[in-house]
Image 1 (cartoon, rainbow, N blue to C red):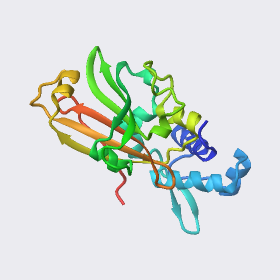
Image 2 (image 1 turned 135 degrees about the horizontal axis):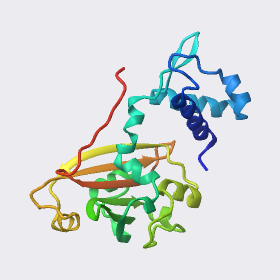
Image 3 (image 1 turned 30 degrees about the vertical axis):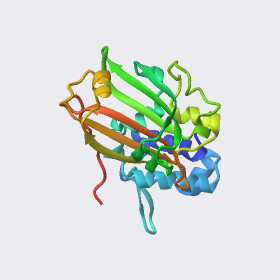
Image 4 (image 1 turned 90 degrees about the vertical axis):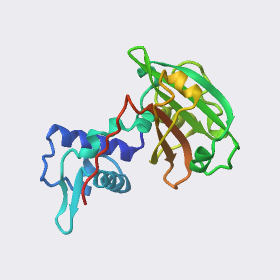
Length: 238
């Protein structure tokens, strides 16, 4: 189950999207939210901070917090490949597990995990397909101690998202993702797996997941043939 502040964020987002809280209207006060939802003040403060940072609400000194509406950022969150893989069940996307085990970390992934290059870590890699054709190669890298006692070594697709699974099994809390996007030519093995010409570049999306203290937990790498995908994002102009 998500932490209480995240549950409150979701509840308030639903009210904004449904029109219960209209754009431009005054959001209920902290005291009103505490009384209605039966949560503590720190929970309400944390939820309101998230909504403000994401652009759902804005604060006006001496007046309170006002509803802005569904932000443009939220409309494209589902297009963020790393986040989608971490939150969506594997059973929801056709594909096959192509690798699961202990490997030496590549330099870039080691840097994102604050680990030594070539040190050992756990890798779970899936080839995702759509309409029977391979579309992306998704790799999940995490420290060995974080993989122990999980189902990540299983050859079966997980019925829950990676985030939910690790939270339930290991008690870790994902807080934010630092994303990097690069382009490179595919290796012979990647080109074969993805059914793409060796002359077509790959888009490589790296998402480094960290907890609230900034400690790296997981790195997800999504490889996308550049001739089949485009990446879109949106952000508020401040």
